Length: 258
Image 1 (cartoon, rainbow, N blue to C red):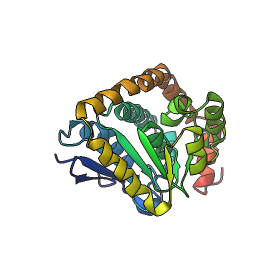
Image 2 (cartoon, one colour; image 1 turned 90 degrees about the horizontal axis):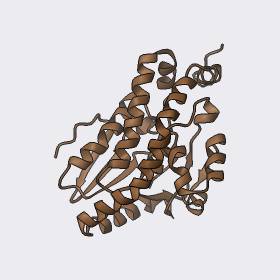
Image 3 (tube, helix red, strand yellow; image 1 turned 180 degrees about the horizontal axis):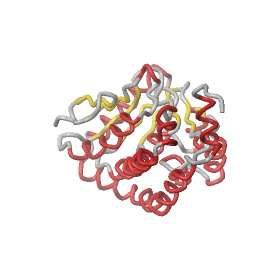
Image 4 (cartoon, one colour; image 1 turned 135 degrees about the vertical axis):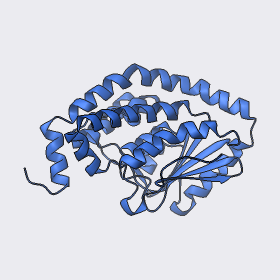
């Protein structure tokens, strides 16, 4: 199968595995409009790939993803149509991951921030490099945290911990993430990808219908929880773009005085 994706998302075919790489290494795989769209379109295509059994997702370069590109946030703050389309696209991305036929194994090779953190939260098995960390800084930037992380963290860890990390945007080290249920395993930095690949190959060798149906059964819990909150959360995130807090933070990051 030929994947129809922008160059910032690459898919390598390795037998029954599909190796997905976020591919903006010069920008630490920050999420611009092209990468946002690529991730949204990725998961239905993985599901349609009849020869694929398991996907492994990682980042090229030093980061998994450094989070949202502030140029995109600036444009969304000033363009209501772009904001609406991007937020709707974000909803599709979340639901596409939840409904993806293939098990998704994450190899977190570096920082996973913002939407990068959400992709990890929505993956099925998570391996983190020792030096990597998770962070969802939506709230400190001035945005409602409306996508994957805060939507599903309460299923992975305690509601109190989900609130703390969603409110503060604090970094969650790999060791802490594994301790509280946001990651499965922590690996030496130079072993995280190969270790994730080994588990992906193990899953790919198991009976396909049993694996995929079991994932669907388990993700029904996730889907029900997400559908209960996502539309309300997305509406409030859209509202956030009109606040002075968001605009001041974007201007500060982009070096503009107000």
